[in-house]
Image 1 (cartoon, rainbow, N blue to C red):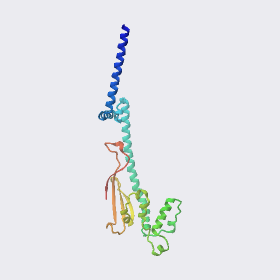
Image 2 (cartoon, rainbow, N blue to C red):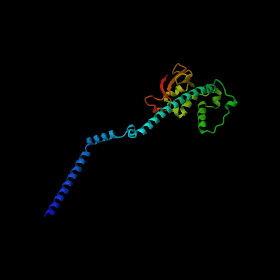
Image 3 (spheres, rainbow, N blue to C red):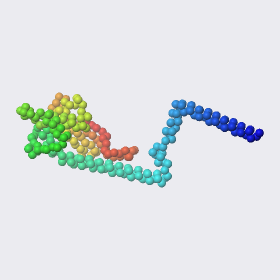
Image 4 (cartoon, rainbow, N blue to C red):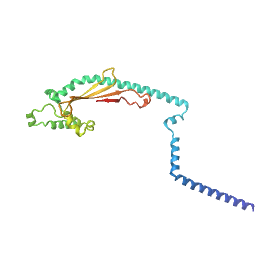
Length: 245
């Protein structure tokens, strides 16, 4: 009868649809196991990923306009920050002059050019790190009866001991530097003159030695404190742009 024929037709259609679905799933599995297909798919996904700029472009124009205004404000902030660091450099120069008499006195004590008075040498420390450093210096000087008899001059190996005990400096010292550092007598920092481009120099003053004839070795670092015109948002403060010496 017609009902049976209709039922058979529907059954055949369902079976055909099921077979077609199975074939599609099998074909999809085969395709997804192909490395070239996967690589191509990944590339297309990467290309369609939103970058920050493309993400912003999805905003309404009014929102984009406000974001542009924020960018302009941020650039102005960067220029103010650059000016701040220039004034910090000026302050460093000013206070370097105030420190200098103390540093000169330090040099005299270290190199035995002068002896501290009782008042100048009176010191009580509760800092373990300072005590350790003092102990290291004491060992370097070898303060005992024998040392007193030999009349030790100044503080032997002072700067060498500093370089060995300050973490930031000790990382820079190589084994071949050590005998040279034992001749180091003083370190001076000099800043560029007012109105000149930002820079500072390190002067290393050495006593007579077998390693070089110059008594002073100088290293000058040139700096800039201004946002990059092509990427102003990368500004993080003054940066060294050149080095001489």
